Image 1 (cartoon, rainbow, N blue to C red):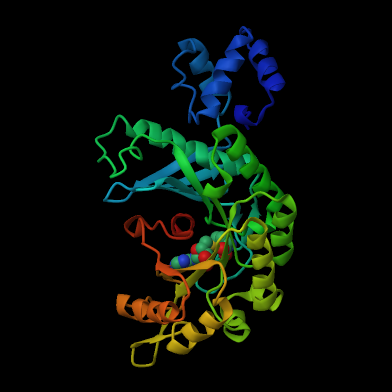
Image 2: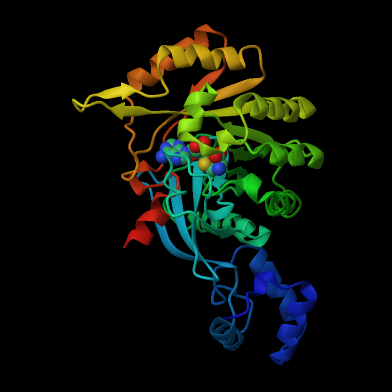
Length: 366
Ligand code: SAH
């Protein structure tokens, strides 16, 4: 396998370059390109062409390689299917929004959690990603954003997202970040120190691994926490999220409030609205009845949180149905009536299968 230069320390990189008969300062130049996310050596413009070609044949830049890049028709969302050194595939998504450029990163190849509505977990867990593999997903997005300047891309209302840098990170791609907590922490520390992304612009989403939340509390950085709740009772949650057999709702929320109290941060609650088909083929509410909305309100009333209502992105292998906008609004109205903050998550990039592990799954099926 070709050495991955991004993974080398400065000393190792220097040695590598010197062994090629090159002056030391080239190592520094190459490092700068690597830190900017250069996907190949040929784009390293201040390196002599012969060296660029030599490196291209003998080494690799980042620990991820783009094997597919899909762009939504509105030009706002770019999805990357990336290959790791051992052939595993992961996905990341760049979203150009009015508040900045957000990247959704994967923390694992595959997922062991087994949530019944999700595509990412269908092939099981392959392995944890290293901090470098997670960080490289941001670099790929950053490189893409900088090349936006050369494309005819519409200017955003705030004027700067068009040629801005990555400003927000959500650890909401494939995998359960709190099953890979130390590497996720390492990644976030680096995104903050090397890329200058503020703690408050970084969100980690978990299905509710209580010891992992405790570890984030101990770590003490004021990032945002999101809990994938998706059901207001243990009975229902156990049916769709096996992790609930291990950590019950009350325990998960208790840990989450302890986290948010620490920095006075608002907790994000994710709630996918799921339907089922009855025997006549009609869609019925699964976790989205008025009673569920009332029970959810009871759990959250008076707490510092925001409920993100998420329309379900249909997954062929999964036995659920998406709900109409009306059903989503009726559910939301009950939360609002009960004084619970809520918003409906805008769907992005559904035309490119941007949701939740679909790209990787479809590629594996081929
Ligand atoms: N394992 C973490 C992070 C990855 S999942 C977690 O559970 O939070 C990111 C979010 O996408 C979670 O809220 C997850 O429940 C949701 N999700 C999974 N599959 C989905 C689908 N098909 N449609 C909409 N949201 C989905």
